[in-house]
Amino acid sequence: MKLSNKGRYAVMALADLAKFESNKPISLRDISLRQGISLLYLEQIFLKLKKNKIVVSARGINGGYSLNKEANEIKISDVLNAVDEKVKTIGCSKDSKKGCNGKLAKCITHNLWDELELHINDFFNKKNLGDLIKGKNENTI
Amino acid sequence: MKLSNKGRYAVMALADLAKFESNKPISLRDISLRQGISLLYLEQIFLKLKKNKIVVSARGINGGYSLNKEANEIKISDVLNAVDEKVKTIGCSKDSKKGCNGKLAKCITHNLWDELELHINDFFNKKNLGDLIKGKNENTI
DNA sequence: AATATACTTGACTAAAATAGTCGGGTATAT
DNA sequence: ATATACCCGACTATTTTAGTCAAGTATATT
Ligand code: FES
Ligand code: FES
Image (cartoon, rainbow over the protein chains, first blue to last red):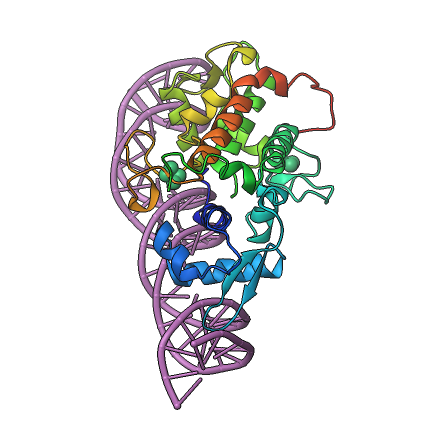
């Protein structure tokens, strides 16, 4: 039960973007160097962030990415959804009437996992990128 | 970001155990048939549950497993810990001073994942096996 | 005593998910 | 022109998870 890097990297990179924001876009190269994330991997991640309107891109020699909204209008859940890191706790298909393991009814633990999923999504809905960079002078990178 | 089957199976099997509890132990074969979980996989899981004192075993022809405590004294977190399904949200080692990706300080997202971990563990601490079997007559298996 | 049942244990393999890379693009400021 | 930096799909390697196998041991029943 481990969180994946892709979601973590996406949030890290966007936090970096929010922190160093100016009137000029920021290149992935800069983020890669600052955050220690592979540039090629970042490209893959930002493609999705762009498709989902979290960031906007500028091509060419002084190009890069900028946030598409204010940092505190971008929820962590938006970011995770954009990179396909949705939380999935249950073993059965959510809409189908069938249970997990091919059973006909929902299993006895179904509600538990369902509640957990709500609990986690709730957390991600309440947090936004702005929350992360509030204490800019903290001992963080 | 998917929950693994091992933890889910462990909780399912124990809920089954709690539900069909009597003065006699219950064999894994029965649980396997009822819950549609591979018998061999269940054996592996129950070994860990036994080592962690969640269940007690009885060998021989009428053998099987029984809960070691009352169902409502067994927290979901106990079960997940027993089968090594601890939640791990952060990318850095929790005790070391170093951050993730080999950085010297904690990264900007560190607190977020740390809070999330607390949030999830909190959920698992509040729920117990007894909660799951309260509505025994529900439309669940 | 023989037998069938069911737990015990460690190692092993298969499958799936994740992490990360590669190659060959296109747009644009200088 | 040229260097920079985004764009995009496909590919491979790595790691984790899921599940199996083989060879036991203990015990109730006949
Ligand atoms: S988790 Fe939904 S039926 Fe088992
Ligand atoms: S998650 Fe702890 S330092 Fe990045």
